[in-house]
Image (cartoon, rainbow, N blue to C red; front, side):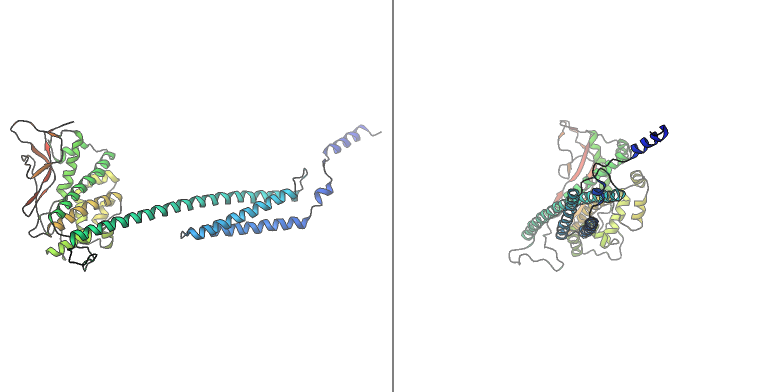
Length: 422
C-alpha cells in the first residue's frame, strides 16, 4: 500500500499525461519524402503564380488586351494547381487530434499560402473587372470615332457644296489645306450668332463663381449699368453679358484690334487665311503651338480686361492665374479654357469682318436710345408693349450690330422698364 503523498503524486502524473486516440506510431510514421515533395510542389506553384501575376501586371502598361488575356489564363491555371494541391493534402492527411511542433509549422505555412492565394484571387478579379472596363471604354471610343468620321464626311460635303463650283475638281483643298469657303454675308451672320452664344456661355460660369464667392449680384449688376429697370430679377444676367461684350469688342473697329505686333498683316487675304486657320482648331492647341502669336496676345489682353483682379482674387483666393497670364502664359485651367472659347469666337468674327471689301462696320447702341426695329432686336421676346406714344428705351446693349454691304445685322439690346408676359 502506497503512502498518501505518493498516491497523490501518482494521480497528478496520470492526469497530466496526454491521451492519444490513435497510436503514436501512426501519427509519427508519416512518409517524410511525400511531405517534402508536396511542400516543394507548393513553393514551385507559388513561384509560378507570382511570375504569372507579374506578367498580368506588365500587360497593363502599356495596355495590351491579348497579353492580359494570356496572363489571366496563366494565373487562373496556377490557382487551380494550388487548389488541387490543397485538396490532395487534406485527403491524404486528415487533421490529427495530437499535432506535433513540426506539423504546426507545416499548418502555419499552409495557412500563409492560403492567405496569399486569397490575395491573388482578389487581385485577379480586380484585373478582370479592369479589363471589362477597358473593353467598354475601347468600344465607346470606337463609336465616337465612327460618329466623328460621319460628322466630318457630312461637313466636308457641305463645304464642297458651298465652296466649290461644279467645274472644279471635287474633294480638292487649296494650297494651305483648307476646303474652300465662300465669303458671304450668311457666313458672317453665322459667326455673329456664334459670338453672341459664346458671350452667353461664358457669363454662366462667371456668374456661378461670383455666387460661390459671396458676391452681391444685384449690386454688381447695378455697378455695371445703374438704374436699369429689369422686368425680372433673372434678367440681371444681361448686365454681366453686356459687361463681357463691351470689353471683348473694344477696339473691334480697328484692323489691329488694338493689338501691337511687328508682323501684323492687314490685307484681305491674310485676314481670311487667319479665319480659316483657326476656325477648326482648338484654341488651347493653337496657343500651345504659338503662345506669343497675335491671337495669343489678344487672348491675354482681353482676359485681363474682362476679369477684374478683385473678381479673380475672390474666385481663386489669389492672383496666381492673373500673374501667369501677365507673364506671357496661357494656363490650362477650366476657367481660362472657357474664356478661350469666347476669345476665339470674337477673334474669328473680327478676322472675317476685315476679309470683306469694303470692311464690315460695327455699331453700338447707347443706353437711353429709343428702340428701333431696324437696327435693334430685344433679347427678351415676350414683351408687353404699352399703347402710349412713348417708345421703349435701351437699358443695355448685349451685342453690337453690323453693317455688311447694304444689309444690317441688328444689335441685341435689353429694354429698360418693360413688362413681360408670363
